[in-house]
Image (cartoon, rainbow over all chains, first blue to last red; front, top):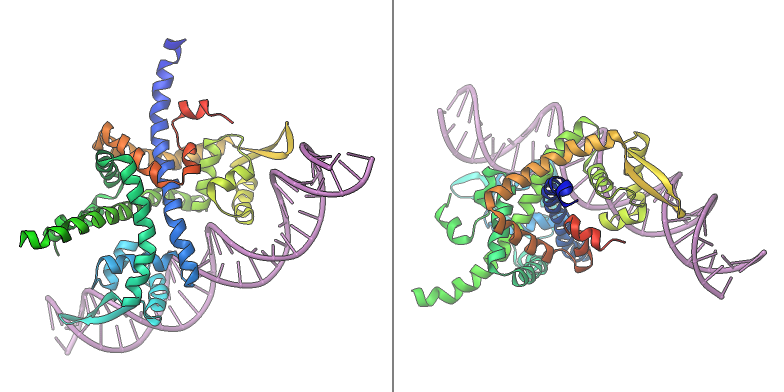
Length: 168
Length: 168
DNA sequence: TAATTAAGTCAACATGGTTGACCTTAATTC
DNA sequence: GAATTAAGGTCAACCATGTTGACTTAATTA
C-alpha cells in the first residue's frame, strides 16, 4: 500500500505545495486589504486612493509617469483618483524645477495623517506575522515573494539602505 | 555621527521591513494575476471567473454558501459570474442528496481544462520562486503569510494531508 | 524650428463589486 | 402539522475602478 501510493503522493504533494502558495497569496491579500478598506469608507475613498496615497508617501516627489509604472493602470484611470486627492488636499503637486513638464507629487500633512492611519493597520498585521514566524522565516518570505515579482520590478522592493545606493 | 543616527536608523529599519512586506505583497499579487488575466481575455472571462473556477476545482462539491465565505463577496455578485459559468458549461451543479437545498458545484471537463491552463501559469511562477529561494525559505514564506491571514481562515490553507484529517 | 515627452481631458464602455427587496423550496423546530 | 429557518435565486439600481481612443497643451530636446 505504501509503495503503491508513494509516487502519487510525491507528485500531488508537489502540486499541493504550489496550490498552497496560490491560496496563501489570495487569502493574505484579501485580508490585508480588508482593514484599510473599512477606514477608507469613512473618508469616501476607495482602495485605488489608498494605493496612490501609499506610493506617493513612500516616494515623495514621484511623478505621474512613475506612479503609472508602479500601479500598472492607465493615465485616465489614475487621473480620476489622483484628481480627487488633489482637490481634497490629501496630495500636493509642484513642477519639477529641473523639468517643468514633470509634476512632483507629495502628501500634504492631511495626506500624511491618513497614510499613517491606513498603513499602520497593515504594518501591525505584518509586525504580528513577522514576530510569530521569526526572523529566519521573514527572510524566506522575502526570498519567495521577490521570486514571484517580475524581474524588472524586483529592484523596487528593497530595504532603504539598498534603495539609497541604487538611487536614480 | 554614527551615534546620532543609530536610533533613527534602527527605528526606520523596522518600519522599512514592514513596508517592504506591504510592497512585496502588492507587487507579487499584481504580477501573479497578470498572466491568467491575459488567458481569460481569450475566453471573454474575467478575474472573478478565475477565482470561482479555481476554488470549485480545488473543492469539488463545494456549495454556493461555502464559496461566498471564501471569496467574501455577495451572493448577487457571485451569481452573475457563476451563472455565466453554468450557462457556458464550465461548471456543473447537482443537488446534495443529503440536503437538497444545497447545490454541489463541480468543474466540467471543459472547466478542468481551463482551470489547468490558468493555474499552471501560476504554479510555474511559484515553482520558479520556490526553486530559487530554497526549501527553508518556502517554509518561512508559509509561516509569514499564514500569520497575515485572519485566524479563522488559516485552516483553509493547509497541505492536503492535514486538510484530509480536519475533514468536515 | 520640428519632434518628442509629460501631463491632462472628454467620452464611451466593461467588469465586478454593493444595497435592498423579494421569492421558492427544503429542512428543522416548536 | 404549522411555523420558522436556511439555501439558493432574482430583479433593479447604483458605484468604483478599470479600459480604449482621440485630442490638447506646455516644455524640452534634437
